[in-house]
Amino acid sequence: MDSDASSTCSRSSSPELAVDSSFFSNKVFQAYCADRETGQPRSEKSPQSTGSGGKSCARADLSKDGLQDLRLKVNSRERKRMHDLNQAMDGLREVMPYAQGPSVRKLSKISTLLLARNYILMLSSSLEEMKKLVGDIYGASGQSHSARRVLLRTSAAPASQLPLLSLAPSLHSLVGSTSQHTSTPTVAPHSPPSAGYLGFPAPPLPTLLKDPLHLSSGYRHFPGMPCPCSLCQPLPASTASLHSLSMGK
DNA sequence: TAGGCCATCTGGTCCT
DNA sequence: AGGACCAGATGGCCTA
Image (cartoon, rainbow, N blue to C red; front, side):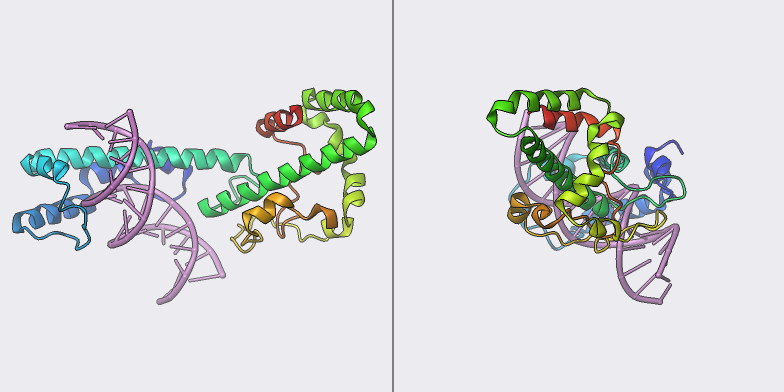
C-alpha cells in the first residue's frame, strides 16, 4: 500500500481497500440505506438534526449512487485529514528527546503531546536560568552590552558548539543537586513511556508558569525521562533555531 | 483475555 | 454549498 498511514505505522491498515471494497464500508452503507428506506434513524441522538434540514434535504434528493459517492468522498477527505495530523505528530516525535529507531516502539499520541509540553516547559526554564546566570556573571546594568554580546554569539553558534554544554556540569551543581540529576532512573530505550511514566499529571498551568521546574530547589528532571535539557544534550537542529530565537529576545 | 492504542466511518456543527 | 473540524462508535492489532 502506498498510504502514508501504512508507511508510518506498523499496523496493517488499508485505507484504499476500505474505500473501494471494504466489507465494513459496504455493510455500513447498506445499513444506512436500509434505515433511510424504513425511515428509522440509525442513532437516537440527533437533537439538532430536526431543525437544520439543509444538507439532509439535499442528501434526500440524491440517488443511492450519488449518496455513496458523496460518502466515499467525505471519508477520503477525513482519512487524508487524519493522515496529515499523524504526519504532524510524527514530526513532533522526531524532535522529542526520546530514543528513536526501528527497534523502538514509537510514542503514543497522548504521550507525545504530554512529553512535548514538558519539554517546552523545561526548555523555557533552562532559558530563564541561563539568562539569570548570564546576568549574574556580568553583573549590573553597566555590563549589559557584554552580556548581550555573549547572548548573540551563543545564538549564532551551531548547536553543537553552544557554550552551554561546557557549563552543564557546573550549572547542575550550582542550581541543584547533581545527585538528583544523576540518580534519575535512566530510561530503557526500548520501553515506551506511559503517562504515569512521564511524571504526570502535571501541576496546574499557572503554577508551572510561575516556577515550571522548581529550579530554586534544584534542577528538576521528570522521572523516567532522559535528560532533555539544553545543558545536557546538543540541541537538535530543528530546535536550535527556536533556542536562538528565544536568546535573541 | 482485558485493556490500550489506533484507523476508519459517520453525522453534526461551524466557517467561508 | 462545500469543506474542515470534531466527537462518538466500531473493530482490529498488540501486549501484559
